[in-house]
Every structure is written in structure tokens, then in C-alpha cells.
Image 1 (cartoon, one colour):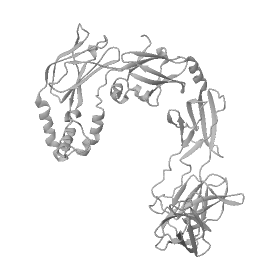
Image 2 (cartoon, one colour):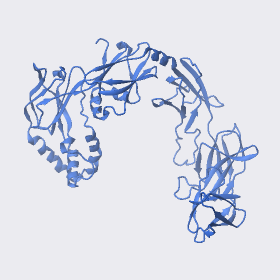
Image 3 (cartoon, one colour):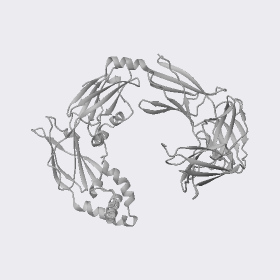
Length: 554
């Protein structure tokens, strides 16, 4: 048909061996015995060329529904087992065939050379391949196709067991008509319970690899120069969801049933096409530094599109262009900054920007085709906290998570826990990121019952680095006696919970008399929790406290 673009390509130069070769990749490395490699390589010559070739090969390619094989498409590949794979297989056999491996040595044979095969059409519609003499090989692979792009022949055989006749695998096809006035594309989606796509992947990868992208997140473009028509084949017969994409926006989704040996028509719906085109918006987003207005060219902008995350780099003006945005859908954007490229001796280098910054961009109710927006981003400000005498781990430690640091802000006359983008361990203390102005301080939890705080620091817009110090106090010792039903709760795991929001608990084990010793207590109270009992609050304003636990539900 004039103007038709057929995506099916000529048969490629490689043979996809599927799951056999996938397992063989790790299997070869795991089982190769270097000491045996020379001997196995010699064995390869004996097992292959020594067996002789094939003389007078004849195979008949049978027609299907009156459609015959194309004689010009017939080719035969010579496949041999690579010496490394052969050596690995022998080592695997000597090891008792432990672990996954191929069913047979010759399943590892790979095509190293293709040759066109003589083929003759016969009166009954079949095509006879041969007679043909072939040199020695571990395996032979025959491939051919019919002229309709829907029927494909393939056989893998050894010397002496070539098939006398071969029927084709029959695929389906999709004939798509799209409007030429818009930028149209197509996505394909599997239907649960439909055809086993895995069994068809090798054929599709060889004949039309772009179709595999359409099954993923890359819309298959429909070239308006081909009258807006494209023919997709081969496809597995059965149900398939077809998603029409107009100017980057998914305009409709329709389920079709594909029949083996036939092309099914799919035409874009004019109303859905018009709506999709009207919703498609291009965003020109400019990133600048807050205050200075300097363009930001370092970050990457990530868009959580309906078809997965897409990333864009700004130009020299700090502008990124994002096309195909659906104006009716939520827009999720983030600026991604690379980590600081600090030398190894600058272990306390602090980044100027957070790794991820959400970008609030409003397109409006009825945006035009192109929208321009500017977002000003504020660089990180840091409060560096010195904590003399306290070891701050640079990596998570097994057991105790302490010390723990908490940023606090003064609001309405009281100190309240606040969120921070980052806490970074540094020599002698901790650095805490700051995202807004106002009075702040840092609390250090050395244990749930031992908390020390820094002096207040006033954060301003004209500075990016601040420094403070936490001096720990000795505190006092408190002994808790845990009782249940009037008896000591000996040997029980007890979770001690700090009064600060979000602080992790610390689990201690009561001794034989049900006692816990809390050294250096500085907070007015903690909570304790034992499995099977209600949580209890304990005052720490005395040297000894008796905790009478009540069973859950009592």
C-alpha cells in the first residue's frame, strides 16, 4: 500500500537464544576451570569439525492459509559452542551439574556465520530449501519469512536430524491510521491473561525492535510523511491495549483483539485527538538562584510523567523545555543537584544545594500551548554544631542509634521540633541544614533520658554559615524498678522512649530484680514500654522510681 511504513525489518545478524543464554552467562563464569581450558578447546575441534558436515540438505517450508515462504528470505546459520562455554560446561558436569545450567551442551551453540540458502517455490505452495551442502557445525539454524510480514520460519537442528517440513509461526499485525496534523504516537500495553509476550520477544527483537520500546514507555512515532499510516508487525495474537498519544498526551486507550495471520485496523478517534491536542502544553521553566537571580545550569529537572520519570538539562540561561505535558493532570517536578565534588581530604565539605528540591509550578486552568515560568531556588544554609567529648558516627551503628540530633525552632514562645533537609556528621560534631529564617537551636540526645541543647542562633537571609556548640552536662542517676502484678519484672526487654518527637527508643534489659539504671538523666520524664503491658510515663526528678506496669486491656 502506498504511503505505508512497514516496521518489520530484514532478519538481523544475530540469533536470540533466550533464557538458555541468559543462564549461561553467569553459569560460564561460575564453572570455568582455567586449568582445563586448553584441553577443552582441543575437545571442541574433535566434537565439531571432526564429525563432518551435512550433504544434500533439503527442507520444505510449508504454506499457511495459502501464504508461502519468500524464497529470497531463506538463510542458514552455522552455530558452534564457544571454547570457553564448552570448558565451563565440562567443569559443570565434573562438579555434578550443581546449580542451573543448559539442558545440553549444544544449547550453548551461537551462530557465527550466516549463508543464504537456495530455495525453490513448488506448485503446491511450499518452498523447498536445498539441496545444500553445509560445513561441520555443532548446530544449524534455518530462518525464513513469508512476504506478508506475519509468518516466520525457524528451526534449530543438528547433523542428521533436520526437519523434512517446517510450518511457520503465525503472528498478528496492527494497521494504524493517525491524523497528520498532530504529532501522533502509539503505546502498546499487555493484557493480563493475554499472549505470553516472553515467547515472542526474540522474534520481535529480530524483526521490529522498535515495537519493544512501544511496550515500554517510548511512544512509537507515526510519520505524517507516510500519510499518517503505519503497519506494526509481528505482534502476538490475542488481546492488546493500544494507547494513542497526541502531542505527548495520552488521548485514548482502546482494547483490540489481534488475530493470527491478519492485520487489525486501528484509527485514532477524531474527538479524542482534538482533546489531546488541546491539553498538550509545553513548559519553558527557568531556574534562578533566589536573591541574586543568577541562572542555575547545574541541576537536572526530573518530571514524573505518566510514562515514567524523564530528565532535562537546562541551557546556559537556566531554561529547560518540557513538551507534551497534560495540562489536566498533576505536574510533579524536581530539581536534582549533583553531590559536591570535594577532595578526599575535605571530608567536612558541605553542599551548597540539597540533592532534591520539589518545584512548585502552576500551569493554570486553561494554559496556552506554551507556558513560561521562573522558579527561584534558595541555596542551603548550614548550622555547624560542635559537640566536644561526644563521638559522632559517620555511618549507622549496630545496636544504639545515639547520639541523635534534632533541630528546634522557637514558635509562639516555645521550642518545637522542626524538620531539616540534612544532618551531616563532621569532625567534632554535626552540621544541620536550615531552610528559613528565625531563631533555631539543636538538641543532642545522647540517650532517651539525656538531652543537651545549644544556645539559640538567629538565622538571617544574608548569611549561609552559622556555628554553635553543645556542652553536655553530667545529669544524675535514676534507678527504675519495674513491677508487674506486684512482682519485679526480671530480665524483661524494656523500650525507653525520649520526650522529643521522632526520637528513636532504646531497648534495655531489666536485671534480676527488675531494675534499669539510667545514668546522666537530664530530661524531666521518659516513657517505658514492655511487650504485653501498657506504656507508662516515668518522672526522673528523683534517684529511684517504681514503675507499676498494667497489662494491656486490663
